[in-house]
Amino acid sequence: LATHNIPQFIDDAVRQLVDAKPQNPHQFLRHVLTPKPQIPFPAVNKGTTINKHHRETTIICTIGPKVSSQESLGQLLDTGMGVTRLNFSHGSYEWFTEVISNWRQALAARPGVACALALDTKGPEIRTGCMTGGEITVTTGSEVEVTTNEAFKNSCTANMIYVDYKDLSTTVKPGGFIYMDDGLLCLEVKECLADSVRCISVNSATLSDRRGVNLPGAKVTLPAVSEKDKADIKFGIEQGVDVIFASFIRTADQVKEIKEFLKANGGEQVQVFSKIENQEGVDNFDAILKYTDGVMVARGDLGIEIPPQKVFSVQKDIIRKCNIAAKPVICATQMLESMVSNPRPTRAEVSDVGNAIQDGADCVMLSGETAKGKYPLNAVQVMADVAHEAESLAQNEAIWRYMKDSTPRPVTSTEAMASSAVALSFDDEFGMIVVISETGDTERFVAKYRPRIPVLIVTDQPYIYRQAVFRKGLRPMLVDSFGATLADKGASFMGDLKAMRRKSSMGGQQLKVNTVLQSACREGKELSLVKPGDKVIAIYDSDLSDGVEEATTLRVITVE
Picture (tube, rainbow, N blue to C red):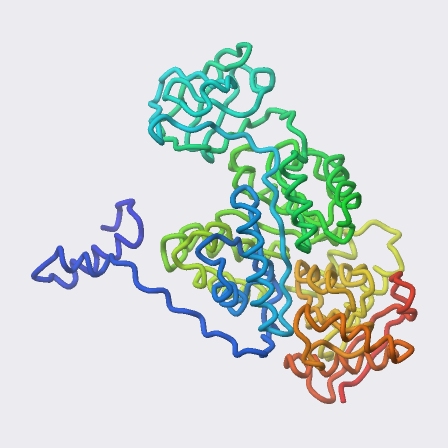
């Protein structure tokens, strides 16, 4: 029992069988191996603001049919979901419209809970066709011809597999490899023909329909934004998504192309996060980082496109560079993969999540764990618990010094003010930092320097309110023209915002900065971030009416 290599849950069942010595072993094992019902996380009462004081890292949840109802989305929010990810590789617009409607209703029932909506593009993926009989089995050493001839699109066999990439024969070279289904099948290229490639199978594997294809080391000629991606992004703009997770970004020009498309279609406020998934993206990362709003380390395809032993070092390098550039970074793929079918993670998975957070990841992502897994709430709770533990080990002042030493000079005045505010927080006992944000610029630099106290972001822009969740340690607060908070007026997440703005404009002028800071202190008290008598650091632009953000004022106030 100590040396076999079988799944943990079977190992545990056998151990229980040996210990119990039941009269009916078959019935005993049937009882032990039957999946137990998931214990739901206690729901937050309607109208309650969740206190996330003790967790700084944001959890991204991928939504599938199992968790697409308003009730399920509400439970994910209550458990700790901070970003809702919709994967546009699957699903129809009708389904996505329903999910987004359910998501908005779940948020409306939870005033004060911030959650962003992310659209993950299909991107320039390469896929196989459909297999004869639904699946095929390729054996080691067998000859396999990979073709782009559409005559085989729906009739792939073990010796003839269709892929939907027309430039295949000019992209790969003899001696190279073709991977299918996340590396499940490896084919070595032997000869390139006009519309096909002759290969030898390196291993045996069973393939089903429409499996993904990777060409490690090859420069794929597919466009960054396909026609499907363009249609999906337009749909996302109409639905009010906050972020585009752009798949398979290889160059900075591809990021620019997506941003130009967003601007041309009324999506200027939508951010672009580049998914680094291949060697070309790694090689061009410094240029990509200059133009992208954020980055996702997408380790699934990345682990096939580059040698797997290099994934962890690339991950650390990307996270470090993003931290220095004040760009949010997400660590994704297989973080708690075993929880797709098991209620508990492996020890290695827990260490993986904790190390990513310790390295500086702003967000960690769940994919199949929530989209199709048996225990979606458990997975979110485990990730939240690991985040708590990892954050408790952070050496914030050492991180601040590292960021100061690693940042090229000169810096902007806004970054200098943000750095000074964080430095001040180490020198005395402060309850929190309040940032009044018009455009989101100041908050990104405050987050960069990793203060050890909570940071409350006050903004009158709903998109800044939601996008703030991508940055580590920030807690956004939405106000109306820097007037009263939505929570103060009992407004719903979306519905009463316009009415409140009309009321504010009738007053003739915006409320002064002091009133905004008083509202922020009230919010801090409600969230148990501060108590009366605590000192608070405030940083803001003295002119809140011009729509331009340049932090000019740093002051200390006392909570009443």
